[in-house]
Length: 191
Image 1 (tube, rainbow, N blue to C red):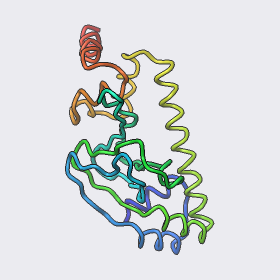
Image 2: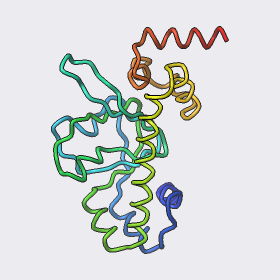
Image 3: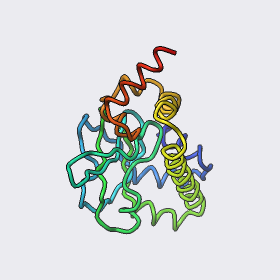
Image 4: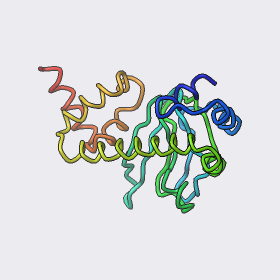
C-alpha cells in the first residue's frame, strides 16, 4: 500500500512494523457518487483517507437548506472526528460528490494501535494538528475573505473542482447562493 505509506510519511515517518499493522486494519473501498459515509444521528466508527474523488460534509437546517462545511479532496482524511472521539451521534452528513476511492479504517482499532506504537501516536497527533489548522483556516476564510476571494482560493487549492461537482455545492461551501456564485464567475471573466 504505497499510497498509505506516502500519506503517513507526509506527517511522520513511522517504522515498518507500525506501518504493517496499520495496513492490516485498513480496507480499500470504492463508493459511487451520492453514497453517504456518515448519516445524521449515526455514531461514526470509521475514518477515511481519500485517494480519489470528492467528499463533502454538510448539515441541514430547520428549513431543509443544506450547508456544506467541508469539501475533501485527495489526499486527505474524512469522517466525523467529533463523533469518532466522543462516540456521540453525528450532526453532519458525509457524502461522496463523485465516485470515490478511499482507505477505510476503524477509529477504535487505530486508536488501540497508536497506543501500542509511539510513532503511530505521533502520526495521529500530527494529523490532528493538520485537521485543526485546516478547520481554523476555513473559519478565517469565511470571516476575512469576500466571496470572490474565497472562490479563487478554492480554485487554487483544488484545481478543476468547478468542473467536477455541482455549482450548488460550491456555492454552499463558499457560504453564498448559486446566483451570487454566478455573479462572482461573471465578474472574474470580465477581469
